Image 1 (cartoon, rainbow, N blue to C red):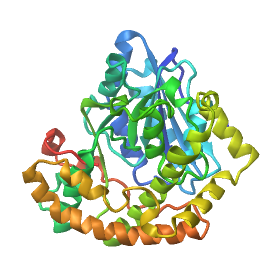
Image 2 (image 1 turned 60 degrees about the vertical axis):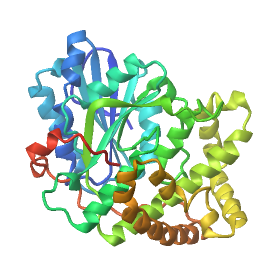
Image 3 (image 1 turned 90 degrees about the vertical axis):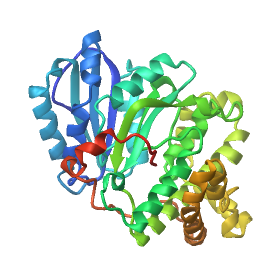
Image 4 (image 1 turned 30 degrees about the vertical axis):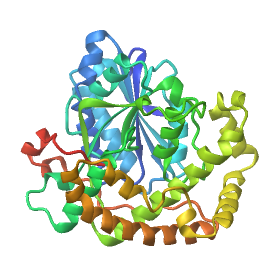
Length: 391
């Protein structure tokens, strides 16, 4: 489907893809936070263009209409409106994987040097975030992806519950690992992104799949974490899972995704000849088109061979304690309760994931929450909070 354009501009240097499914409650706030970014002004100083494409997929609510209204307003009022264009692409098929593939390989400007991927239920609360992500890749030729600091909304609460504190402690353990990539917001070199295709049965773990491909230069060597770099003074906020039901469902989703990534990058893709890996996007797209069940068969065979839930992928039950060991002694002590609780959550979620995959299913999403908090719900003082990482 052709995008509906609301403005025209010069050649796009950066292409921003916003992925939305039934985001009526959050899309306007997300877009307004985007248009407050200094990226547009910095590009205009260079005489460079930018495009913003909202890819809505399978929506049954007014998300597309809200996005168009915001785009119409921005292309009339924004001080740098002459240097960007906006469009809404309305895909009938639901699913972020297809939306990502369509944006990268069809809708984004072919001349764009950098692609920014953004979920429609986050807030970019630092004004220089996107510019710092782009300029970081300009300076760092060794990196293929730049990321920001994801901040849970509960970080800005004045009075935190015990579950809030456990959630933030778990975040510190996650942040201790190198080369973290959060799918909610990142910037990637266009030539790298266009050699990636997300298989339709990858489930909801595109960040793990992209991370492995990027950090190994498409499985040509061991992981080089420096391929993913953290941009300075760059942050976004998202709504954290805090209820027990939501946490278990999200962990189940993560384990399903990590299992499929393990099957692909540790087993199957390494058997593909190098010349096919160097054109991996075309290779995987052709497999999806010619044999739509290929990945499901690999998953079925893997689950049968694993036999037990704790063998879905290496380190399944150890990863939290491995992360704990990377912290300083004081932080290790503070995060120990979160690691213990997380271990129990992992066991239960792994059993759920194993049962789900054993039944032959792959498409799982725990359901949409209430959406991100409005911009005004984040205290102004919190906007300068930088001492704690979140994921």
